[in-house]
Image 1 (cartoon, rainbow, N blue to C red):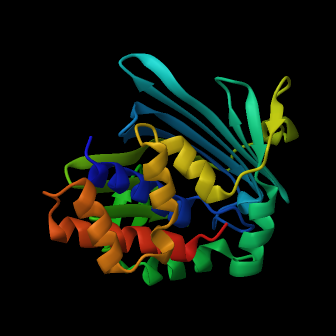
Image 2 (cartoon, rainbow, N blue to C red):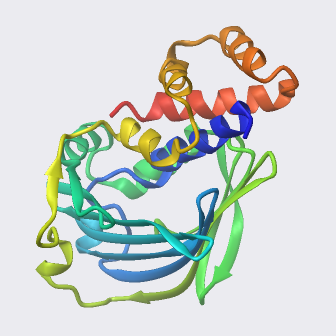
Image 3 (tube, rainbow, N blue to C red):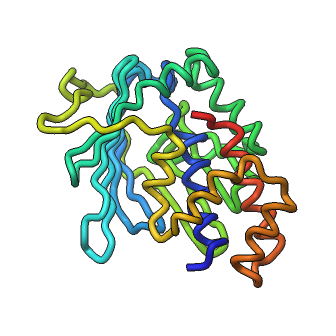
Length: 265
């Protein structure tokens, strides 16, 4: 895989964290729900289950990804008040992400719904209409900084995310939505037998997760992108991929800068 394509995948991962992965209070406009998704990513196909209560103060996300019928990702993300954890169920190792909660609260306040909409607008996003999905009337958003990207959002809950960049498709489609569900405290606790690991920044975790296939040099270069001018970034890409299209370089540069500028965890 050419470097520019690897960068596009990682850029999407970083921007996804910015758009949909922040931990905060009042993240949704409904008190509780359970959403089942089918997913498609460069890693493979899979499923995701979102369960939340108290307007997102407590949340559980369980994601599985398969490649050639092999389970390659089995990840659990837990949020409970000021505590947050990311758990790799394949290794039974977890990282404590609680520090990112405090950071998000200091930046966005306690109304994630309003903050999320403003963030989408700051990234070039526009609400372009309404569309029904699973019987729910959703806001349709398009984001200009990430290729051909469309989101269907119902009361701040993303029911559909479709991203097409340079021939790559990443998607998340809700297959069921149940509002007003019951939850228990156990749903948001760390599973037994899990070992807590060294805490990493949000950006480092994303790079680790989506950076498969990247060399160590690529990762070091990627971490320098926030400080690069466009000319420096273009020279870096051209050196590694002389046939890279300049429009694609500009698009990826804008994606990287948008993600880096809105996610400093």
